[in-house]
Length: 346
Ligand SMILES: O=C(O)CCC(=O)C(=O)O
Ligand SMILES: [Fe+2]
Image: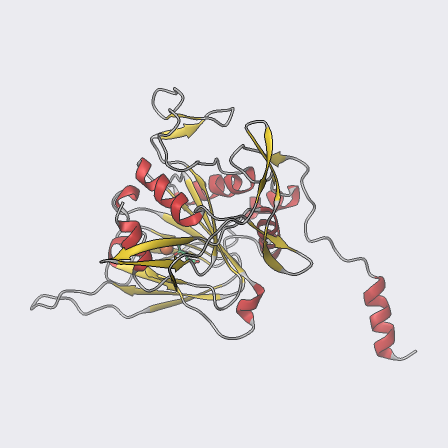
């Protein structure tokens, strides 16, 4: 038998290592399109070793205040954590309209997104109902224009860990999935008023290496104007975490630009933990990260996100979730500044 044939014989006969052992416990909530499994038990064990590296402070540039963990997530689970979250979370491809003068333009968010959490004025009780954070009384129907969803256990586990490391608290988890090099996020800062001054944002990377670019906001010229700091490029690898704090959001912009080449085709997940202080933050996050369109789920066979049509239990009745997005008017991809402008309005 030829060498190649022997190799392929053994390759075929070796059982494929399961990507992760599915935890049979699931997080359930009427707002979820489908149950979300708990974090696999061995991931929970491995996360006991996080952060896998000490955080490196980066504050040698004007108004910059970062801590860079390279990596935070142990390399033994980072690739499988990507597989798990991509497979188990519901994602959205959000479209929204903006009006510039008389012209209505449709923006196509160039990445998959999803979000969980509620601002500090409310919380979820044991039954998963939204109650007033102070009084504990049920929040009246219609208080929120959106349907806030509690963090599923798999993200809440990571939130608790991150809170311990960073000495900050978070009530929101936003997830981005960049399917390939065409997916991106344009230059913006997360400086919305609903996050309060100097917000701390912990930002995790899983999967494909992508450049995280940062540049200082323009500095008004004048006799005492400091020199403009140089642009920063952090080639974020799988498992890395960047904690942005202090004046970073108010004075710097960041982006994940589009990329050519094969690396980005492996897909990248970004997870951010943040703390929204008021109701406007909750409405903004659901509008731009869930929207009103259909659910997408990862199809492992086709290795791509596909519109998900599944059974959803709503008020005791079964209904079908379908991709109901319509395209009206001019359609455009998110452009530089648009996201910051739109989110800054609330
Ligand atoms: O993907 C990333 O690393 C950045 C995401 C981001 O800036 C955001 O969601 O606000
Ligand atoms: Fe951001």
